[in-house]
Length: 460
Image (cartoon, rainbow, N blue to C red; front, side, top):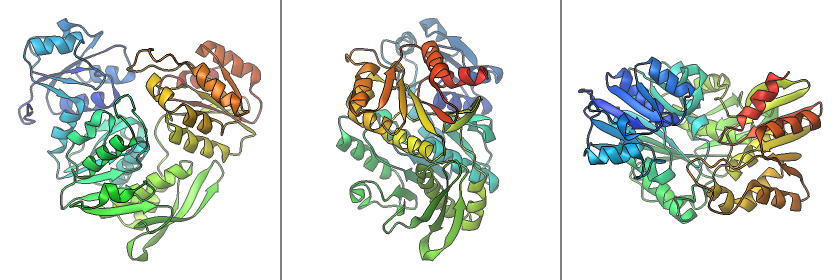
């Protein structure tokens, strides 16, 4: 594989530069003096930010975008061999690498490289850790899969030897990384367009755990089924976190304040304890905080300092994000697109104190919707009313013969109020007519369903 010499900047082209992770890597290289170009299908906040920082941005992916000054090409998992730019780079015999391979090479420049993995919770936990490390004066470089206001986006370039990133399991991309500290938050069935089954997924997470060196640390949830299969025989130190059992960092006495905001006592090794009061809702964020605490202690932060730091963490965009009010209706947006994430988010919403929880859900990818249909129906049944939008295809084509109506039928069979509405405009009109004072209106999904909440709040 081609190795980038970071002390000798070259011209790098990104196919799919507007992706949350791709754009972050492009920005790091820009700040290190590389010439950066890239293409994407649409203009966005991320592509415009890159353009302002000196990148050449193309909209539409054409072979002409691979210009003579391009020396290396980076591509995302969504790019295939029939892509014009990919094919042109191959024809020119240019060095090529995946996004994950570039991220892995970048990590090797840092003595402390933290990679946060898990089927869900990665963005929030990475963001929690980023804010702790910044408040403690560690000056980390951070790559996060969401927009974090405290770093002004999805990337932060620090000047220390500490690097923090999310580690995505899709297409086994996290196996290209070089973590000295690894985190595994959970292991669930997802990305079944790539993984064969849950055993395949578990084998991948085991391989990720094996990447951590002998003098490194793996932080892992003790809620993971058959945890010993992931951890037995590892050469690194293993630290567990959890809400029960014999976890090294254990959350006890969990209670909820108004807005479903949790408080708990963390009991660490040698019975070291501290009280934590979070500003982000739900029990799932207790688990995210525990992982942050375990890594923070490894980095030398005291338990009391971690308590103060996490008290100030207000979340990232699209993670139970309060969008505003429509009269007496509260509008919240969340990125949840897996049944476990939906269950956690709706549980938090039900602890909010609203009269009703109305969930507008946009399924994400046909393969995920088909594979997890029953789980989706069960999780969404926690809402008082469900409004389903069209399936967001992302990288897929509609060739599986399913639609959101199939999911609506499953939910209706459970005796829940549900409706499938074809367009966002129609969904907005439906909500304007049927919402009631005291409702919590939750838009949910990894696509563009947030536009519904933005439009409604704009009508106030």
